Image (cartoon, rainbow, N blue to C red; front, side):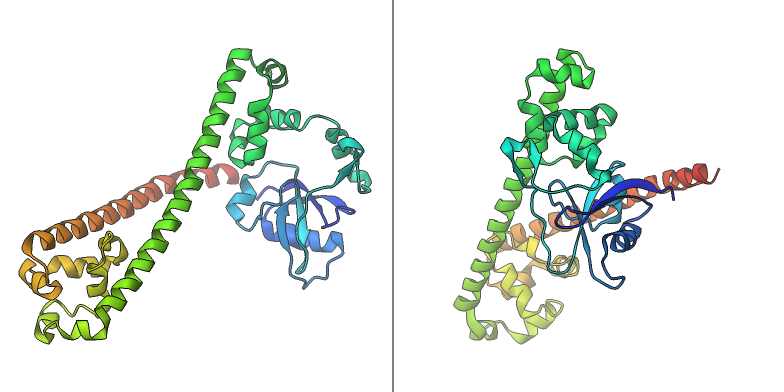
Length: 301
């Protein structure tokens, strides 16, 4: 694998060295050696500029060359670089290897980001929301010459960056809503457990429970939940529900036919959706495999 040039510094940023590594593990090994860590010390890797944790090999390989990393010891945490004198001088001393970065520090931050985009537009996916916002806020007339684009094309790029920001915000809100939903579901399940109690399960005839393919008490309680119970069941439990006669489920749950049929249809839809997702993933995996083999063959040549 081809070695990639990068930079690594310690927590205080007083030490910084240039390295050429081909993997995340190699970065940790060489970083420990050059920064003075003991060989057996536990270290973590973050991006020096914003503290993003780097622990995935694929993410590491996607980062551009000359990315600056920080190695943190067991009791160390990332902090932003401190400045004084209105942001014109660094509050830390630099090694000779950092002098180039000091020159870049004199430029506006958005200029550095624009240079990255000019070299590789795909670097958008690695930029933080603050970076994207700084590029969106720059006047189009100032951004265009740095990118080497026309003002119209620069405006289209800024519109694209804004859409990326909007999508990230929607994803964040969706995650928050999902977490809230799961908390509500857990609370409702707890209320169902309190209302039904252990004695409530004794009211279900033992023979009927056996005829319902051995439904455990948890499955029955989940099915009696008020909010999308099918999403709380495993694939195996969904199949158990679908294998049973509607009449058996009616008696086990104490419901009428209409309500029971609606539940069975919901379980069937949920299971089909999961199977489609699995098939889609398998299809993507099958399509990507030949490409990987082709890429490896080219590299060997």
